[in-house]
Length: 469
Image 1 (cartoon, rainbow, N blue to C red):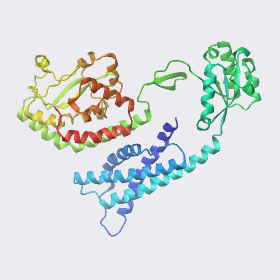
Image 2: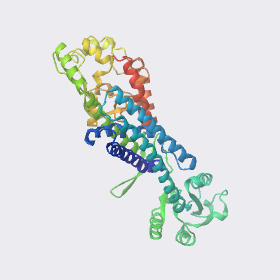
Image 3: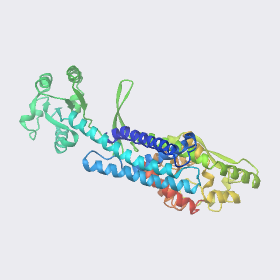
Image 4: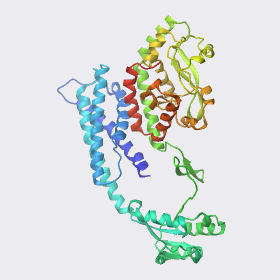
């Protein structure tokens, strides 16, 4: 919960400060009287599509959002300074590689200097303010536990061992009758019985009430009366759920138009980070489509010249939770490739329901070159922009392959498919299908923006080595 609140609060602030730093740097550089004035600001706005997603990735990569504490403040400042330094290096490298000489080096230098100072300063100011608010407004809450059985005892032990981190103090228990009282619960903490709940809530400074036994909560007469009394006195109510919860699930309370639901969410759990992932997908795919537009034209002309037929190859694939979409590629095969697939299935070199052969006779000479360096995948940035795919995620299978999946293998469809994933940077086509699925599930269970960035960085040398088939 703390991490999610930090994400909602700090990341937008950091990105706003970064954008403001660039605008201030532009103003300073453009208003000095020594060097010529810059081109209009509108000509430099495209840099925001690079800087903001890149800074967001680096902030997570360097763990700029740790928990509270003086040492963690210093760690956080160090992380934002690393973000500025590494981001600046990547930005200058892109300018050099793509020969964007119209961009002022002094402008970038001023931006990095101002950004480092502003990010460190804003982080320090926000920390001091939030730290002051935290210690002023979040004193320990006194909690009343309804029930004195096994679940209540276990919860009490947990809170007692970590009450400082939780900010909770167990004020006492109430139970159904004397026979329900466990001998290991101190007598001083037994504040009464169920019928005494209204008096206990008035007599003691109770902030929260926790129903720690399902059997008590299921007694409708007591439950309705207890809820009414807590509501009348403005007490916050919690219900301790004691049921089987698989280890991969994360419990989360949601509300649908007033209907409270306890949801068990499979990984990945960080919804806010997924919003950032989608933002970066849109920004990066837009940038790469703009950058590779001339290459699209060249590939289109060559493909049309050497092989009659369409430039693009569209194939139905399975996306998030099995949703169907049309995946785009540059055509690398003869036009009747799908029709002659059946005669080649005995040559399949992959285990499982996937079909791949190294020397596929259906591939054209130019198509083989495109595949070797994964250039045929470039149109899939259009799928990313549309929302069918992500830049990083399990590769989208065709429906016929999914029909042959074992039950557990279908979990790889629980996230949006991507252009690249773990198995592509760990052997690409040299690994078995079972290892392929295992790496996809490992990616889903371990997902983070930091992992996405690591996979993207590893994909670049994997593509340059030309190991695609």
